Each structure stands twice: as C-alpha cells, then as structure tokens.
Image (cartoon, rainbow, N blue to C red; front, side, top):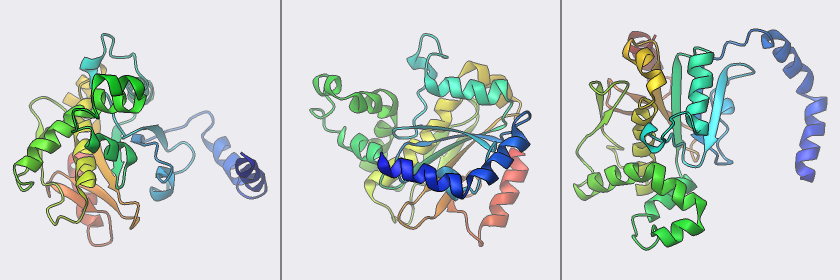
Amino acid sequence: MNRILRGILLYRNTDRLQMVKEFEQVRDHPEPKAVFFTCMDSRMIPTRFTETHVGDMFVVRNPGNVIPHAHHFEDEYFSCEPAALELGCVINSVRHIIVCGHSDCKAMNLLYQLKDPDFSSQKNRRLSPLRSWMCTHAGSSLTKFTEWKNNGMKDPLIFSSETSTRKFVAYIDPESKFALEDKLSQINTLHQVSNVASYGFLKERLKTHDLHIHALWFDIYTGDVYFFSRAAKRFVPVDEDNFHKLSEEVRKYYS
C-alpha cells in the first residue's frame, strides 16, 4: 500500500495536471469508441499498448477476459459483463467491442488444468470461486480446444460471430509458436465473440452492421499485439508490415 501511496504522490507532481486537462475536455461530452474486455492480469495494461487516453474506451476486466453467454442468466442483464455492454453499446452507442486475451494467462492455465475431472469436480469448484467461474463460463472454450487438440491441431475452427448465420474460420497458431495454454487462450478469446453476440439487446445493431466485435491477443513476453483478421483467418501481428492491410480490412468490414 505504501508503494501505491508513493505512486499517487508522484502522479500529483507529474501527470495530474495533464490528466485534469483531458478530463475537462471530455467532461460533458465523452465519446468513447470501444468497449474493451480483457483479463485482470496485473501485466495487462490495455491503455498503454493501445495508446488510448481519457474518454477513449470503456475497459472491463475479469479472470480470463470472459463474457458469459446469455443462456447462463434468467435475466440477461444480471451480470457485470452484459451490464457493461449495455452501458457502452446501448446508453453510449459505442460501435466497437474488443475482446483481448494474452499469453501466459493464469486463468487460462487454470482452465487447461480443468480438463482433469477431479480438479474440476463439484467439490473442488465449491472451494474455489475461480474454478467455478472458469468451468461455468469458459468450459465451452476448453471443450472446443480439447476436440481440436485431439484432432491434431491442424484443422481450422469455425466460430459464430455477430449473428447466427455469420460465422468465421480461424487457424490457431499455424506456426506453432505458442504453448498449449496460449493456444487455448486464443480459442477462448475468439469464443467470446459469439458470447457477446448472444445478448438480445445487441442483436438489432449487430444484424444491421451498426455494431462490430473484434478480437485482439497480447504476447506479454514480446509486447506484440495481434489482431484477428477474418480475411487472413488468423491472428496477425499489428506491425509496420501488416498495418495497412489490417486498416483496410477494418475500413471495409467494420467502418
């Protein structure tokens, strides 16, 4: 806590005045452009690697960047994640939803262990809110990963997107650069796209292409950020070589 207090003191003498100026600029008319779902991992600082500032995004963080599917709730509004979607996309008319996973995700590492029936038993889940959260809301990601792994990890996967009739194909880590848990993390990130689309209050905007869902993935060891390109059918690094292609894809399909 002392470190936090020292950090606040440093902020008062360095960044505070600039931040107050930014607050004044957006105080009465903020125009956030995205709802950004990511993991609560302490190494993930989304405003840092996206260079976003005051008023640019709504940021929602939880273990494993999971958005529970609407079928888990009798009332689809009864959860933090859909409440955030309503605040961002209904009340504030944000047009872009971003789900961002990352490498060495502790929640995904735990999810990978949950393939062990004893580890994921009801008894153990009652003792661990995190196990229960991951089993309940990310178990379908693990099932999809397990089937893909058992089939040799070469075949493309098909994910539902903005509507039930719109789907996209994904090749997961075709160069086999990442650990199994990281492959699971990428699958889980893409699976959340269909979970986002399950909420009734978003369906009309998704159907009319007035609202778009994107997937990012962050490698904490290299600092590289990957954008899931539906044209390339894979996560593509956002770098100088790919920027113009990705920018054109966004302009063509998501503007």
